[in-house]
Image (cartoon, rainbow, N blue to C red; front, side):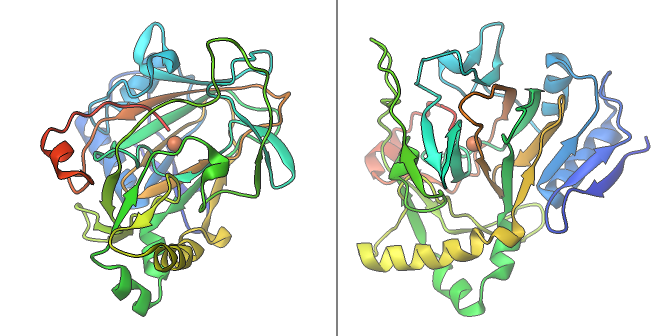
Length: 319
Ligand SMILES: [Fe+2]
C-alpha cells in the first residue's frame, strides 16, 4: 500500500492517491482510508477509471449503504445509486427548480446543509461521483463544522452549548433564511401531474447545536442553515439573532472549499461533521452525478413530538 494524501485547500479536505480501486481493498487500506476520512472530513479520489462497481466498493469502506432517495431519483438498475442529473431538455421541474442566485440563473442550486437534517437520524455520509461534469459552474461547496466550532468566540461557545435546534422540512430554497444567496425562484412550465413542490410532509425534529465527534472528542458546530431552524425554547427574535451570529462563523467564505469537478472524481464527506452546498449550473448546461448514501444514526436527534419519537418510523429521502 502506498496511500498518500495532499490537501484540497488550506483549511479543509484531502485528496488520496496511491490506492487501486479496481479490485477489492485489503483491511489495512480500508482502515487507513477511514482514518483519513475521520481526520479530514472530505476526501477526494481522482483519476480512477470508475464505474458503479468501483463507486460501491469505495462507499462500503465507510459503512453499509442504503437506498436514500425517493424512487424517482434512484437508478433503475441499482437502488443504492442515486442519479443527480440536470438535463436542460427535461422540463420536469420536480427536482430541477430554477433560481436566480446572486444575479445568476441556476438549476440544481442547493444552499448550505447537511443531508437529512429534517430527519431524527442523520446518514453517516455520501460518496458523490461526477459522471459528466458541467461545462460551467456546478461546484460543490464544503464547510468543516469542527473548524467552525474552533472559530467561535469563547462566550458564544458557552451560550450555544446544550442548546437544541428545531428543524422543519423546507424544500424551497427561497423560503430559507440562512445559508442561501440572494434568491428568486424562476417560473417553470407547468406539466400536468408534476409539481415543483416536492409535496413531502415531515414532522419537526430536534438536533443538538453542538455534538462531539465520537472518534476524536472534537466539538462540532452541528447547525444546519436549511429547513427553517429555530432554537428550542427561544422566542423568534432571540432565536434569529443567535442563529444569525452562529451562521456568520459557520458560513465565513474564507473557510469554504468549492470543488471544481473533473470527470470520474469521487468525493466522500462525513455528514456528521461537514455541511455542503450545490452551486448549480446555468440553465442551458447539463450535469450528471451519481451518489451513494452511507447508513448511520448518530443517535442524538429526535422528533419534537415525543409520541412520534416513541413510534419512530424513518423514511428516507435525499436533500
Ligand atoms: Fe446534500
